[in-house]
Amino acid sequence: MLLEQTYNADAKEASGLDGITLNRAARMKWVYTKPLTAAISAELKSMLHLHSSSPHHESGWSRVNRDAEMVVKVMAAVETNPFTTATPSLINISTGECADPTVKDNLTSVKAVGLKALSDSLSSDQKKTSGVKLNTFHTQNRMKPKKSGGKTSAPGKSNEVTALLRMTQIIASGGELNIVDFIGNHECSDLSPSLFQEDGTMRTGTKASLVKILKEKTKVSSIPDLPQDCLKTAVVVDAMSAIRHWSFHTGEGFGVIAERYRHLLLNDVPPGTDIIHFCCDRYSTTSLKSAEQEQRYARSKPAKVYEVSEQYTAPDPKEFFAVSANKANLLSFLCEKWCEDEQLEPGLGPTHLYLGGGFKEETKSVVLTAGVQNEGVDRVVIHANDTDIITTCLYYGATHLSDLTELWVRTGQNAYLPIHKIVVALGPSQCCAMPFIHSLSGRDTTSYPYFTGKKAWFKSSMSLDIPALEEFENAFLLHLKRAALATIIDKNAHIAKPEIPPCTEFGWSLDNGHVVPIEELYEAYCLQRRLRDGANKMVKAYTTSVSSKEAKESLAEANKGYK
Image 1 (cartoon, rainbow, N blue to C red):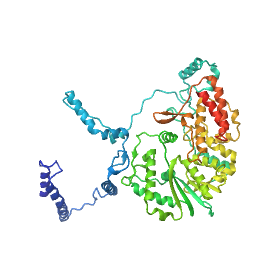
Image 2: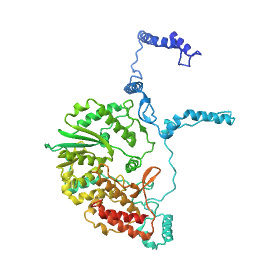
Image 3: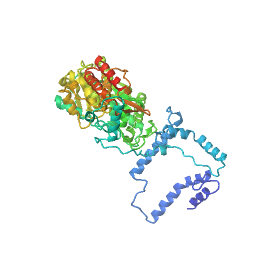
Image 4: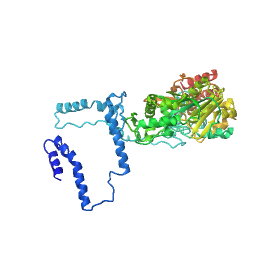
């Protein structure tokens, strides 16, 4: 008790702060006497027969795990110099979160901001310096207030003002107007309810239903194991699909995650595999993939970007994977870590592992599949559960990869889908049309037309005469162009660096650096028939070949109408 009081008295002297002393002698006295005071306390309790059955509040499993995580964090922070990292981002050394440009600018120029505030108060003879509000990591993570938008009409409900404006525009441009025909050919609402939600986003649906329809039509189903054939095998792994399947726990170190992923990758391929391609994706902010991510991961909180390195622990997986930059950082870290791993080569044996990236994932998988065919591979197994990859493989299985003996897509842990058998059952013509049918009926970069499922599209594509279809409004023409672009990407997947036309020419626009779908254009009514004819030609051309003369001419004809 006397020692404790002496320490407290030393701490409250002028040489120290309240409760925390700067007096070295006082600190040494407290450290060396703490075990003694604890022993005296324990002996006194024993003499008085004071025994507590409840454990100490710091001895619970949650506190012990927390302390273990904190020890790892502290050791990593002490052993790592944060100023030698190659990243240009400003990082929160506690959580690994990266600062956005505004926070980075505020925190790195805080001295200049403070001096300016002092200068302003002195020049204006203020008695009190005005407070300076800086953006920090705390303000970065605040929820942004929702913008209150005006009242909009319900989907499918007519908007009289919009209808009158359209009629006025047609008459002013010299067109002839028949009210009955106009109402029959146009949806009088701010957006096209058949393709867009009330907030302007594209209608979404379940694209995986197409795989179920294909299985029912062809009588081909997945099998739990691959046939035990002596075929030279190559495995193409969709990196993001694998990582999302393996996942991780909140608080797990990224170094531990990398080792666990390596073990799972090397032990999750068929016996005797000759080649493994681990496909990593890279997407720019103005690509269609960015629009796909925004549509897929609707966020109520600001997106958090994290630095991925051994010194940091993983955050919540759901929050982490919702941001493309985090996935790109994780993939880069895995590739760098595995290349430096001394245990990688002995674990591989005769198998060759290739780490690559730079393309959209489904196109990258097909590029590598076409490439390994030149190395004498007889069987290719793609680890992915994406419908886009399956439909693209159907097209290539009937064209560029027709000489491949077996082409499989592993959609689950014990589910192998034989693409080569589905190709035979469908036939070359239907396989060539599959990417366009999939794009028209709805995918991540096109709308899902209201009340029309993929089953109806698939059946109609096998029975209807497409050029004989009735007229439709220009919102569907834009949908058609977006579907055409998605088809172009799929059918050029065998080219490493394909010349893909700008998305702004195919029903997309750039809004403050974001790629957004064009909802509708307001053309004169006299152009409707011309656009319809161009659209019908485009459908017919793109179901066969995207590089044909008819496809190019129909696209040029449609563009003339819009201009």
